[in-house]
Image 1 (cartoon, rainbow, N blue to C red):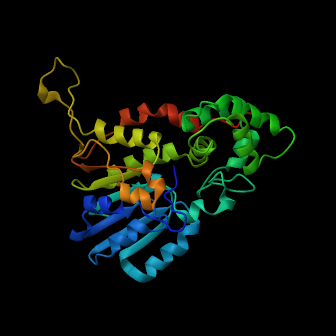
Image 2: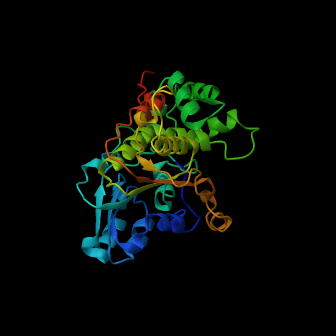
Image 3: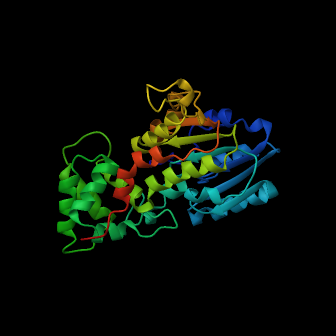
Length: 330
């Protein structure tokens, strides 16, 4: 996940576009699965007929949530929980479920959390409710498994030599954020473009927070609690996330025959109405105000039917979930 940030202020990405999709002017209950700095939630709550249930695994956001609770009273509730457990929410008549998979400014700018290559000190990267930190991965994970994480979650061409240098250096010292950045720079010193550390830090954040499993389970859970006619909207920031969301909507919005030799009446159901196949991307004006928004993509679909089992969806991305479940076998 990339950061939804500006140097001075947090901007909820594609806010106007998302609001136009979920239609809060007509009232209803909305679930903000990634509360963050509260930008989406507060905009929705401006209409007095709306209620918002906000989720976030990051416990440090309770203060922001408390301010909204005080302002909007019974129309806003916050739960410190992973959105993969969204099906525990027992609310009827949900109008829309929103996922913004970026990081907020207050999260990324807290250098002690180690989410950014600009951080200092101990490698952490935990977003909350985690089983382990990045420090444990760098200290214990085998060279082979580190290389897999960097390759599959960061699309890093130099995964093997970076993993090798990490294992070599940790024989003599505890590797911190600055050390990791120096290792990456030493391997990729002549490379241009994005910051050399971007892909490695992305890969580690995904692994530490099990973001692939979270997203897959979150999307399925959202479908399960959403009434027919409700909408799921997702803002992604890198290709893995977008690939998963695109498949989720596209695969179950098309009618397919189980065999070309069978009559059309045997066709499977459509579980989503996918009005727009291509994602919505930020305008040039938004990118000028908030440059990190340039990688954002917004996809959405309306629920048509109950009863989808999503077996193909899950099996299609099992290879990524398997990477997330690699052992600390150094």
